[in-house]
Image (cartoon, rainbow, N blue to C red):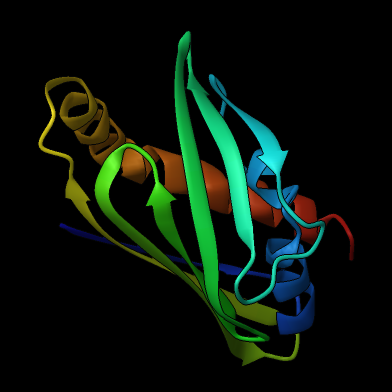
Length: 148
């Protein structure tokens, strides 16, 4: 299964990339009622780093470990090492539109886990991706454009 979302933010590439490279950014752009608890992650994400966190979907804890790959000024990839999906690869790409506008492109490739509970949780998460990324784009714009 594949999902793609793109939006533009009025901020230069370096600002957008720097924001997304911070492990705290994930919690900052995650919509309620989902809560993020980071158990272990470096302040700034780089190649080979792991981020160990729990997404709280209401009372349901979803433990996740993601490995960071292909990190650079134009984006990075997080690959699920442990979590609710059979496969989860999320590519974050940042493209210069002009000196003060950057396009953010999120591409996700996933497979549901063949498990009664986690398969249903994964399906619910898959179906909610459009809402999740609509919120993330709104919140990213709000946070980064307020810095101007």
